Each structure stands twice: as structure tokens, then as C-alpha cells.
Length: 229
Image (cartoon, rainbow, N blue to C red; front, side):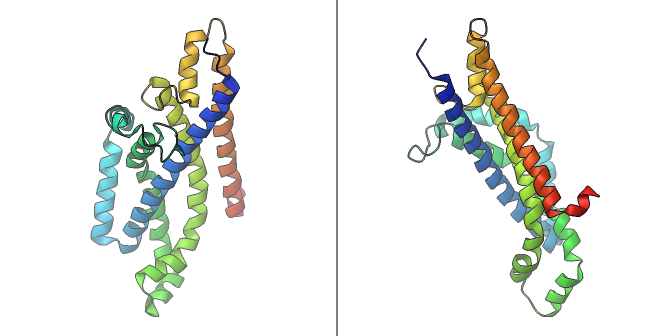
């Protein structure tokens, strides 16, 4: 063996996996929220353009395109680590997830803004001459924070699974940089002599994903107690 400490690799792999998931979630939610809010508030041609762009993006077989982009673009971006702050390959996966991850939050925010736009407090703000930016910032954004935060926790969990799957297939984070996905893949070589090497990364993925899902459920109940009735 190479004398590697598997526990430390598991911890480091968790850091890399969480880097991918958190950064991908922040970017996808930011892009989707901006486009969704613009489409829902301004409607008209803005809504048409965003809706058609959303439909086109959803029509692509996302998994195949993610694998293709990660395989082709990854060679140029894998070494971008911002001075060692990020693991190798993190930037590639984050950018790929941004491309295919913005449209779900865009649809959620658009639907919420379309509903809020018909409320009396928005009409009152329009009658007082408030600018569009002020209405969005002061009247709509406070109502969007809760659903965005709740949905973000669920998205983090999905990106942890996506990173693990891509790294397991060899198109995500590549060895020797550890992530939970490639630790699972590498453990296949030793499953006869050390089967537990496959167990610990799998448990880490399951527990972390479950934790974020439970966090999302808890935040949803906290922000909207009526949902429990």
C-alpha cells in the first residue's frame, strides 16, 4: 500500500464534496433567482425569453452533457484552485452544475413572484411611484428568502450525490485529490481484502445527504408553520 490514512482522506474528501455542493448551490440559486424574479415581475418578453430558455435547458439530457462537459472542459480548469483554497476539479464541477442547475430555482422564484405581484402591497407601492428595483428589494425579496433558503438545503444534498456519482464514474474529482465519490471508486480495487473501505464513504454520503434533507424540512416547518397542519 501507499500508507494512506483513510480517515484523513475521508475528512478531506468531505471538504471537497461540500465545496462542490455549496458553491454550486450558491451559484445556481443566484442565477435562477435573478432570472426567475425578472421573469415573474416584468412578465412580457422577459418572461417569454426566460421561460423558453428554461424549457430548452430542461430538454437537454443533463447527465450526458454534464459528463461531456466535465470530460472536455475539465482538463483546462481542473488545476484552478485559487491558491489551494479549493480542491482540484472543484471549479469544473461547479461551473457545469451552474449551467444545468439554475432552471429549477428560476421556476420556483418565478411562480412565487407572479403570485406576490398581484398582492395589494405591491399595487400600493406602484401607486406611490416606487421604482421596480425598490419594489423587488423591499417588498418581494423578503418573501423570497424563506423558500430560497429551504430549497437551497435540498439542492446541496442533491449536488453531494451528483458529485459522488460523477467522481465514481471518473469524470468528477480525480485522484489523488480525494472526494467521497472517487474514494468509493478506488475502494473497488480492495473490496476483497478491505471491504470497509467502500462502506465509510458511502455512509458519509448518506448521512450528509440525510442531514441536509432534515435541515430543509426543519427550516420549511419553521418558516411556514401552516404547512404542518
